[in-house]
Image 1: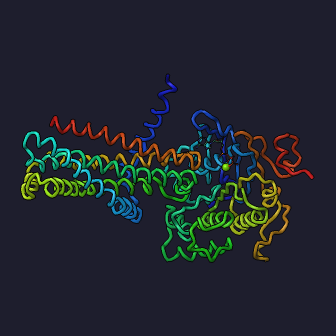
Image 2: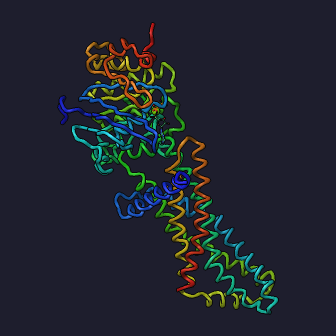
Length: 271
Length: 252
Ligand SMILES: Nc1ncnc2c1ncn2[C@@H]1O[C@H](COP(=O)(O)OP(=O)(O)OP(=O)(O)O)[C@@H](O)[C@H]1O
Ligand SMILES: [Mg+2]
């Protein structure tokens, strides 16, 4: 089991290029168990590529990726399948399978992840529990095309957490959503993090999303989606800012707010 | 100069890589039976009408054209043999494959292409399934099994078409003679050629369709492009391969 010392996810000078165009340059960070990383950056700055590199869907052209204490940069696809069983991921557009209904979508990792093979009679209860978690307990037999954008993201979150992974990756969970739905989604992500103490990486272009994850905790006693302010968050949550693939900032929320860099400070709303 | 040929070389390299992985995948677990049956249904049952129609009219056309040539030599009684040989050796396999390429290579490219651009393929890999085994393998196996069967069907329907034209419409010869000569002229060599071709075409159709689908990028426009490319490339390969396989068999 992971102890707090070995990093759950670490990038060491990771670079990535499509053909000859560099997309990530020398990105380095370490994330210990239970910590949160918020990745900010303009469109096309390489946020999605960073997450896909962390999942082994893209292989870095340089540098090393360390997951759960092991260097997996050069791992075979088979080894990566085992590692991915321990990671939950929400893709930018949800990444739901059009041909499967909601229940089968959420059950997919339970049936297919090599380390999570789950007896068929336990699949449905887990799927229902996971959908109830995102407040969609009644949509099991709908197809993704019949859902609204916000519901699709919630199904995506249900699918990501159904195997109870130690590490969660969320790609722009609030992009294109209205502020109300966006806050519900971020509250769900916070809940998912705090109920199981999962290490969380969230890509976003909204500073407010990061602010919630950094400054609030899910209130288990209150139930629902109640969040309570938490000042410990400062040390548990870090922000990473990407600019054309380059890491231009890595630090706490206070440091981010104090940054004088003209690109970095654009992400912080100044009142 | 190098820049000019770099793209095609990279594309071909990617295609070979996918082909090797897919063909190796045939012997690898897991097998997704549901997906296989779904593909067999869509390919086999779905292609029946178009294959029957093309086969039938190919036979009709052949008998019609042969009739004129044979009449000048007074050899109209041989129409059955000619229809049988051209159908089984060339027209049946090629026409069926072209129809299935138009229908299914495009279907595979657009289906896999939209899965690619909506990150469903990434999601598959992230959630524990290898897209080669889950998507490409069932399509490859289904096509390899069904295209030869569809071709046999098209050959047979085509001979019926030929019989309709030569015996019912033009009364070139008797029905008994038509079927007798048609059946007896076929040699082992013709049948082998008539079955190896669709098998090879099937592999080309499935791999090309899946390859262009998995390579799609750039939103819905990219999917359209992938679909067009898959049909064009698969069709050209079918025509080229007919010649090559025919050449090999002639020299045997
Ligand atoms: N499959 C690909 N082939 C070539 N280039 C790509 C590919 N995917 C992404 N890129 C390029 O990589 C860069 C980073 O893309 P990425 O998707 O990571 O951006 P992003 O930060 O996630 O942007 P957004 O906020 O719009 O999602 C972009 O310049 C993009 O054009
Ligand atoms: Mg992105």
